[in-house]
Amino acid sequence: MRKIISIILLIIIAWGISTVLQEIPFGTSRAKLADYYIHNGKEDTGAANIVTSVVVSYRSLDTLGEVTVLFLAAIGLGAVLAALKQKSDKNSEKASLILSTGCRMLFPFILLFGAYIFIHGHLTPGGGFQGGAIIASAFVLRYLGCHEEKRINETGSILSESLGGLTFVIIGLIGLAIGSGYFLNNFLPKGEYNSLISAGIIPIIYIAIGCKVGAELSKIIDLLMEES
Amino acid sequence: MIIIVTLLVIAMLASAISAYIFKDLLSAVIASCMVSLIAAVLFFLLHAPDVAMAEASIGAALVTAVFVIAIRRTKRYEE
Image (cartoon, rainbow over all chains, first blue to last red; front, side, top):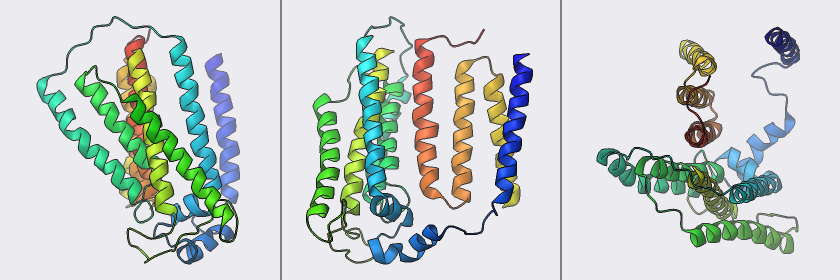
């Protein structure tokens, strides 16, 4: 009975979505704002990657909100897990020498790749969130593959997280104080297009976001691993 | 191009259905990881490399890791 009801509900939802989607022409541009970003993003922000120019320049206040949401989620998870602290006595099989050595060798390269992604966020695809997630996945590999007792350096993780958030907000406030006076105003010189040091404050903010997101996500993984 | 996309979508549907069917939860998690991975490839083919990168790193790596940790904490087989 429950299955029949859920199938009927699914059919109704699918019908609703398909009728709505039929009204929208696929592949043709109707959004004027997107056209504006595509044609003026290069002159306005100096970033070669248009997605970055939207995420960190036109809509950087939204990005600040997004970072804050992730921060609150990490804090909430930490509070919940700290409340039910208990060690499970499941003895797991030790990883073989090849697996643990491979994980240990790959770990610094994945970290380097994550840092590359967020430092080059204004030039190539990717950015702070993607780079931070890649850094966290390096810690996942280390924890699942190596079976080490060693955990993340607590002070280092807290330091990089809070410094990242502070840099973001302080740069936004500096932009509010000088220049044309709005929050997260791009006040630094744009520099040469498509070079590493260009696009004003965008690379600085993306490095800050990358450090913050990487520290938060790896801390979440660390807390979960400690529990299991 | 259209053939590749069709094959990828079929593979994605197959892994989504098998994630539902599998009784071994670890296999189900790997199947849902496959869904994310193929979605990342599809995003890349649709010229959205930024989204593809986020999908591959978060959807395929981190979410799978969280599920694996949860399975380690609970039971592996569904009754």
